[in-house]
Amino acid sequence: MIYLDNAATSNPKPKEVGQAMLYFLEKVGANPGRSGHRLSIEAGRILYQTRERVAKLFKFDDPLRIIFTLNVTEAINLALKGLLRPGDQVITSSMEHNSVMRPLRELGKRGVEVKVVPCSPQGVLDPVDIERVIKKNTKLIVLNHGSNVIGSLLPITVVGEIARKHDILFLVDTAQTAGCYPLDIRKDNIDLLAFTGHKALYGPPGTGGLVIGERVDTQKLTPLKEGGTGSHSEFEEQPEFLPDLYESGTPNTVGLSGLNAGISFLLKEGISKIYQYELSLSQKLFEGLKEIPGVTVYGENQVKDRVAVISFNIKDQLPSEVGLRLDEEYDIMCRVGLHCSPATHKTIGTFPTGTVRFSMSWFNTFEEVDQAIMAIRNIAKGV
Amino acid sequence: MKDNYSVVIFYSTSAAIRAESLARKDKLIVKLIPVPRNLSSDCGICLRFNNEDKQKIKEILKENKIEYENIYKI
Image (cartoon, rainbow over all chains, first blue to last red; front, side, top):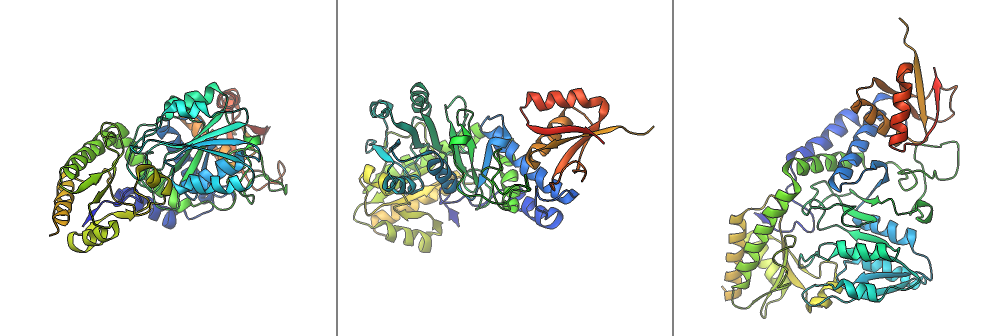
């Protein structure tokens, strides 16, 4: 079996991830922050250690400004709905996933002005186009870092600089880059960094979070939900300190134990090494697919710096049919269609049919890439 | 010799655990314990330390901007 659907969720996970989750269930199994006994404190320590690891990963210095959420979608919703008010303008790109687009469209109905800046059919965003549409009421710029359709990168560092110059906040969706691309929250000028745990961080589903940078005034970022935090129990109002302000209810300690192990694995291997390896896998795949007659690979000029997500189509064949043949005849798992990102497919010209997408991880090999290219060669030939 | 302890009372468990982690990095002997009933009505934990380390503990809290309610001798 060849698994090329890592942009949806990574598979396999390092074995330490499952072990850490089992350890939590069997040996700790208490609720952090609720009770004063030793198991509860141990649960709290694991949770805190996970925050420390996330902080280290993004080169951030305050672990308590890391808010855990169910996934990156919830983190993005917290940032967008917590910050934006009717009358505010928010700027985004035409390459966004629905995790950004849908909350923005909803906010649009509630009176927030949503400005979508177009990218080229190659997925390139010119930062000048962002700066041009900034107005007095612009509150936030939100961009994905790596495209979940074609693996291209948006120029976040430059856009972040523009945001700072105009005193606007900058939210980055790192769903496809956290863990497989070196990120530095300060150097990349990010104010709010939304991440998912179950992709390149190798944690389990149900984990993710939002890193809240120092430029964000938390009094102006309202929580998505209120509830029990184990702190300030004598009050019926939500506490104002972090992370409790944004983390109500019992956290996903089992999942976060796994995430802790996943990030620990990454930090040991080294993000730059992982990035380089995945880049060489994608370059090989990209070049191999491009040579096949009748195959169109999207995002042509994104070969030098990218994440390991590649979209293509075979002439006169539906993505869904190609996907089915890959699964049934070649034992290759991939994702076809629109990838929850209609905006991107409109931008690259593949809407509404979509594409076939191959996405790789640290655990894929060059041999698997060869086999995938061979499979597509056969399918394209009509074999 | 009888140990002389104090405790730092925090607003949140996360802050208490953070302080514990930082104090241990500085090789201080600390322990997280339930907040004594006479000090707080809340159900949280606090950080116990040896009185002689009071200055060092206060520095750690200040340097890392960890907010706390108070420090008590117990």
